[in-house]
Length: 558
Image (cartoon, rainbow, N blue to C red; front, side, top):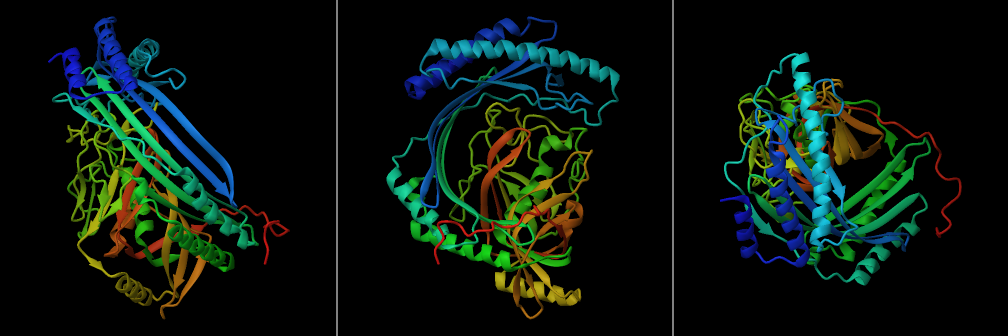
């Protein structure tokens, strides 16, 4: 089936609106002409082109102390062109050793200002971007050939691209739901006004956002993907500062796919008041000195831990690039963590135990169907998150090539899920922690209740370590007494940390968020129960050294 024939079958099966019709038709027509004219225009053959367009409609509103601080409706359309010159064995995406700009193989154009139902205007922009991309791609391929001649041979010679076995055709859009904006703003107003009751809150805010995004993908292999996604987010934050200059904060968020799933004012208000109480506890807490000993990381915080410490290091392209530390590149088949732990990434899941997963998608940004990727099975490393770049021993994508508009595609996480065959109740896990405290003859242990995120260094020019940003934690004494602490981050290295997990809870929870890396920001989720460690290590955090405000907030009344 030729590309153009397949395209019109596609249009006949699925009914498009006017703007979709113009976008797809312009992409398809320009794809055919560009490929026919450019594939042999130079001695180095062009063998692959892909166009991708992101069209998004967003609404957001933010409130502070009951007043609207911003309210926006935005419409954006970004067009990206990817080209490959050379052959799947060596092409223009190959890493240039010594270059600081490895991820520069994709080019984009903001076409938000043009009417998307104007075929001629859309196609003219595609034509302009195609010309720019071809010239830069050709220039890059010539540099790659020279670089290969002047530098040492790579260890992994598996090639640069995995051709598709067959074209993929998929169509699934989502409609914009009717929202009662007045109700939403009224809910946020009631919650945000609660901060007025507390003189120690320096800054705070509550926000709502609704996003409807549609991705259009066409390439010279004949794949045609249209996938829509709708998501909502409500979040709030509050900050304070201790007398010794440490900035502290609390944050919470709610992600959902349908407006009917939105939490009510009673739920959000109760959580807000709990966060206020935690913020006050942090103000009164003592800074923790560097610690080394037993700890529990609670479920949602543990999900962030897995995302940061394990998930990024298991992304396929990091096992190949000679700039990367390649922590797990040669450990397939080896035991890297306790045998009761299994970890996989499955973007096909939209819910886990009834909880919405923000990292869901059907097709990745290389037109590959998303698959469940088993990464660790009973403690043994089994595989990586794969895009369409082969690795030694791995010549198939599992649909994890991802990016945000205008970035190069690399392998990224979707829904990272850690499951355990050695679970106990949370209360039992805490008892086990106390046993470990006594066994290690420590004065106390730690329970980490909230993690903001972290830094995980994967490149060879940096220490192969991680830093976890702890936002709320408590000391636990041998008698079970808990005491809030502040001013600590968890540090370590993955290979040393994972074997120290002794047991897990049965209290699975979900972290939903957005993750930034080389390919931009993508929606992700992670799932984990609470984790018991025989030992962790912490260090002090950086302080601002600024004092809290001298005067009470002008709105505060006792």
